[in-house]
Length: 84
Image (cartoon, rainbow, N blue to C red):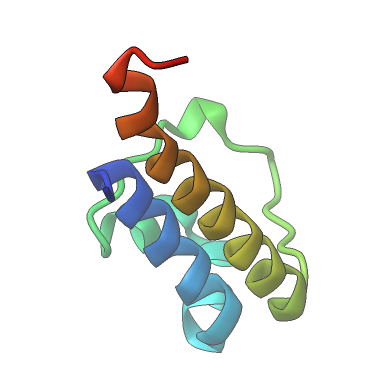
């Protein structure tokens, strides 16, 4: 089961791990870059300067988060069954 938040996170991490132009845009204007993919960011929550990890680190994080979310989603029916 994939939520909107999971899709947004995966989309962001995918673009940050593959798209050099998007990475440059995020570094230069993160609010506009994220808005372009439908993600709103509060300017007060941003650091003074955005410094991104390498594309390889972003891809690794994306895959790790997806694996964690996929395994957690698979456990939901078990927890809902009441058979703990």
